[in-house]
Length: 432
Image (cartoon, rainbow, N blue to C red; front, side):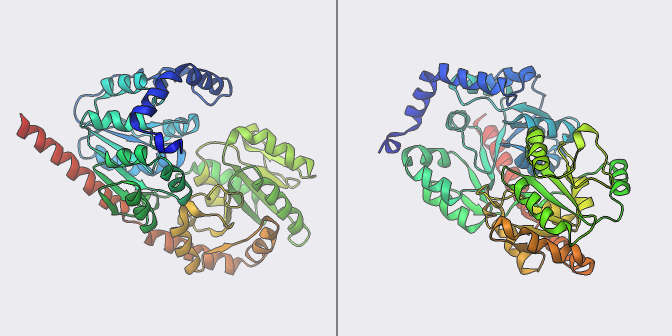
């Protein structure tokens, strides 16, 4: 009932009235290290640098995964003599982009969704086009850009059933938001149908640009050091773990340690700031733990290696051979399996891979990915892969071949972006 009353005007009014509450929320996030104190002005719409001359394409990516997915597309736009601004909302994504962003591109934190911050942001940057990656929709920002006649496209557009149910309670808010986009390029048929049902007016199926990304980079020196430390010990990786995943990995290690002498388990927490918490849990279960950020080496006594550094998944995937895609046991929707598949890993995942279900279906069909129903069956799924190098290699090669076959979305996305840009420029010339 309350949701039915939500409209853009109501949302805007509430965001103005709630300014003191938003300030308190931001202050708390700063105290928790979730906001970048040195660049906090960007969250209020105050620019961190000057706008470059020329046509500027602005791409908004919510966090790390979306930021990395849009980078290859951004590079292709820059090759078209366009300036590129990427915004994101998390400190982690900013740190990753700091290492990966090509020269000439700009990163800024997305302004908090208050009219004043949004106005300052758009006044300064004056983008010629806005690209929204996936479906993090900030009503004031979307509608303010639309009011300025900035063409907007949603790429990698997603709308999960859970999100669709929530938006259905606010039809008078979501419909004008989606209608503001000149084009929505959906990841899947299911996403396309949900977006259309909620009010999107120009939706097409394009696929997932995350599957077009090049293999993650690696520091060869670091790779050689870790390979030397691991030696010929059997090992596997739990990638991008959340609370609960580390306990499952520790339990699997305990079950397998007697049957597989010398077993080493690698754990890469999704949020590195949880490193101390993860290490405490593992040591509490009797495991000898080494922590990468502390400079710990892997020695003969190390049971579990906590790889808690940013931007090193390419290193870990090259080491692993066998990877469990975490975030798939406890309703997080899983993480991108294609990154691990491209680097020839046999894959395992839990029951909840809804964020990448299309890729998982292809990987399972190729015999490259196994799925487990519960945490306590992880050891059963790992044992044949760790005990049979030929089986592991066969699945890893199938994973790599399947991952390479999933690409193509970026070409269609770039074509649509350039079409909209050219249409807008032609329209501007006609008006002049």
